[in-house]
Amino acid sequence: MTEATDNVENLIIIGSGPAGLTAAVYSARANLKPLMIEGEEAGGQLMLTTDVENFPGFHNGITGPDLISVTRKQAERFGTRFITQNVTKVDFSSRPFKIYIGEKLHLAQTVIISTGANAKWLNIPSEKQYISRGVSSCATCDAAFFRNVEVAIVGGGDTAMEEANFLTRFASKVYVIHRSESFKASKIMLDRSRENPKIEFIMDTVVEEILGDGKSVSGVKLKSTKTGALSEKAVQGLFIAIGHTPNTKLFKNILDMNEIGYLKTKPGTTYTNIPGVFAAGDVQDSVYRQAITAAGTGCMASLDAERWMEAEGL
Ligand code: NDP
Image 1 (cartoon, rainbow, N blue to C red):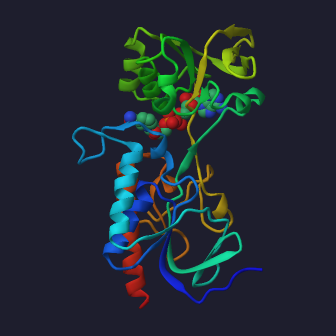
Image 2: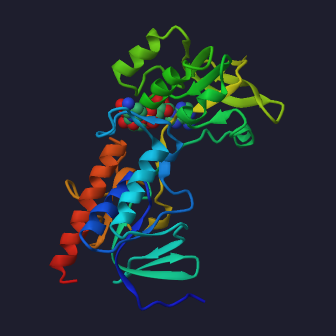
Image 3: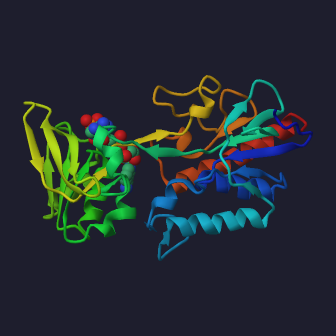
């Protein structure tokens, strides 16, 4: 049975990366007393990041987890309350909005969605078996485990280029395996990888299978997308850098999304198609996807929510 509640929150923020936490700082300072449902894997993608050198205000850089930790403390200082669980269902069909954590119901006048995005996987049968045993989606997190060995990275975008370069700080050799002959990566990032003597490109090729003894990776089976020819490459690590999927399953058939699943917001605002429900950060941004842009839209969402409540006389 669902637990009933009479308590209607002003604002519930779902998701606790830089977007959600910035929304929490702003709305708590505006005295909205926000409730943040931060999720069981609180902090989002920054928790998988080592050095963040491009977040303004930290001239010596800061680690992703430290950036999350200080921003969370800042939100807490002004009265944000946190629940470290996952939302399991939402009902935005009437107001107040209903947000469920299992059987527990929370009601809110406004909602900010900042559930972020997750890395994509190849989804080949052997992949799952080797995740964290040689297969990783985060070079910045795991590169140091691959000192003086050969590794490969899959992808042809900026992420793959950036991570390939980062991997060369540790690995003796990095193969970039890309399925086509053109790159999504920007020229500057691509050139940097091409100029790196430790990086070798394997073009028009996909990974068919990850090879190993079940405990660690010893190589990859490759297939040419042009000729279908099979080959093997001995590597001890495989990094997957093929893009991200927004975390929007909860909102399917409820909120407007694009074909990939990113929430649609009214241009220049954080308004979704449901008045009173706002979206910020990577969950609605497939283009910039930076911590600072997520934080910026988190600020916008808080101001949008505050002004909307005022206009509604709430
Ligand atoms: P992208 O979508 O840009 O690139 C994904 C790459 O993965 C493409 O080359 C794609 O190949 C390949 N790919 C996708 N699915 C598969 C698959 N199943 N098997 C094999 N290959 C696959 O994602 P990124 O994460 O690289 O970048 C996302 C955004 O973030 C971009 O806008 C990028 O500019 C930005 N970014 C910026 C950085 C910076 O400026 N410092 C750093 C990192 C990211 P194909 O081309 O054939 O489709």
